[in-house]
Amino acid sequence: MKTKRYWLMKSEPSAYSIDDLAREKASPWECVRNYQARNFMLHDMKVGDEVLFYHSNAEPTGIAGLAKVGSEPKPDKTQFDRKSEYFDPKATKESPRWHCVDVNFVEKFPRVLDLSLLREQKSLKDMMLLRKGSRLSIQPVTAEEFACILKLAAK
DNA sequence: GCCAACGTTGGC
DNA sequence: GCCAACGTTGGC
Image (cartoon, rainbow, N blue to C red; front, side, top):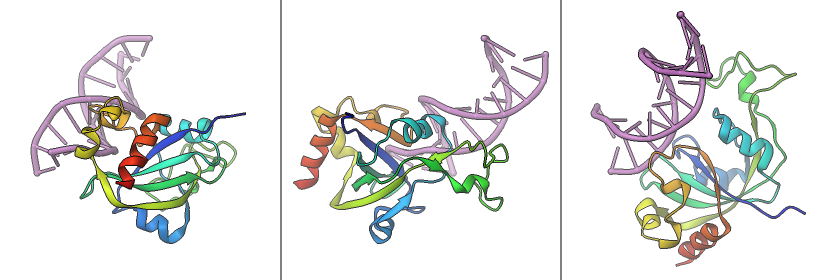
């Protein structure tokens, strides 16, 4: 029996936004090229885990909505695509390097919870996202942090 | 556009 | 295995 985990996944909305996910309903979370982030998808995520969808490099920057892990990990097909900027010459079909999970749309928040708002919350002061220099594009979120963010979104 | 923080690469 | 050089992320 595995308890549910919570995650935060970053995307630049110019590349893929919460609106794109709302339209498509589900999407493979491709193009991650960081081992730590990949390992979360490959080893730690379970179908049904809840995901905070974060808009980085955006106006406003912040948490834009909710999603869910929708599949087991599978090879990221962009690593095999010679035309893709994410092509990886060291990856083979037999031994893929990069994996992704599907992410399913749940909801778009009525407003983006921007960084300044998140920083105001005492209960989020230890959140990985808010730590200086934290660039990891997939991060674990505690149940307490997740609950706090849901409450903020409902306000 | 700047730049701090971090990750990766590759020579040794 | 060390570490300098380089590339990327992402807030501002």
